[in-house]
Length: 637
Image (cartoon, rainbow, N blue to C red; front, side):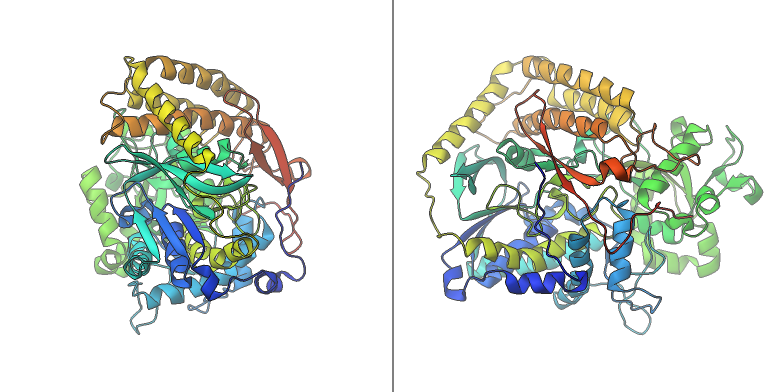
């Protein structure tokens, strides 16, 4: 099937404005008749629930945390992009659009990316009005810093805790609607099934994580804002609770999964220190504004960094990418770091690390300036690594971080299942094969504040409200299905813990489908994943019961979904016989080691349809057209 993204035509500068006018509206009195279910309350979900509640819809919002304030958006550090051009350095909506298309290695939709760039400025105004304490310069104006993949400074930030401050802004708007009664909040609940009635998404089945109760919630539309799936690698920068479960359940009910092989490896993370580690810690990309990446020039040089003179250091990003230097995009900077370590010039335990050095910036700007910009990040690093970055260079290494793939959506952010909308990291739409830094927060808030309030109305205006009630046979069937799955976990009573299986899967995925993939490694993973999955269903140990707070049971469900999803992700990586962005097939590289795209054969979105566990999924394609930014070799040299 050839998929239609329903992108508007005509001059791209007018597409979103024209589309907004052409869409149907729901009048204020009628909005009260509709109920919308929002799953996830991070930046995309929190912004969407608050905005839809403010418009007058009845909203039910769900999160598995004890409060929406604990969504994983809180972990974002470095900043949020917008094309306001405050530094007067040549930025514009078109340049942000161009940088994002190029940064995604020409694997994103032009119309979606233009809209993202266009509404980016509104986001900053919205957040300032909410009281988000963005950094300001000496005169009191909002400050900007640089991020990878751009030669302008367009990133607004709040020290190294931008995600937390933006989430508190969205949460304050959400809390206002909870008080007003337009939003009902259901914390400590996990979505375990999507309810489809007559081909349309009309509800969800959730488990109350405190009591174990299984129940359904029905509405007129479902909005999934549940983040990404990189915990398929086990160790990642994501919170341990982040999973593929919600979108995978939707996928199994017919929603197409697009580009699952597109995952982002972040170049600046604290290196892994042991096999029993539960997660990895991100060090913001913003540190590369003032930090310089280097390794010793000589292999096996074990001298302390302070004893290695400048002439014996290889500032490899500055050497390889003189135009962008240390602010090369994440996929390129990650591969460059791995390259140095593979050449036996890495530092730290096992040689899996490079230095991020602030000595020259401290000398140039003074320690106080660096402390003002990154103080909380330096403090976090010192607590974890036991070294003072003001005195000794940080050690960093790439780690799994973000999912560019996700459920397929059209221009309205609606999946191929009518009534199922997908926002933020959970959809595939704007980042292509690689996300530029500081654009995840931009996408989440753009989708939640400025896209879904318009596009969901167009769908709701065409249907009658309240069509499906809680006594619908599909609701009972969904509850029975979920209960049967949970009983199956409890009945196995094997000998291996859920964590052991997750580690086993993560190791296979990182080694074979991680920063570098090959036909051979993908085929190896496709051979081993079903074996791990078979053993899981025979030998996993889940103690306790389903009718109580039981984190082993929660984790068992999430890992079971990863064990199915991992096969699709690997299949997609094997199918895409090219290198682009974060998808690096070692057989497809330029003579200088850069990614080699195949636009003639793979310039499309790969959207997969579920056909059963262990069965070959069906591939659907959405061709990508580039009329405003022409296809070109992506170079940062």
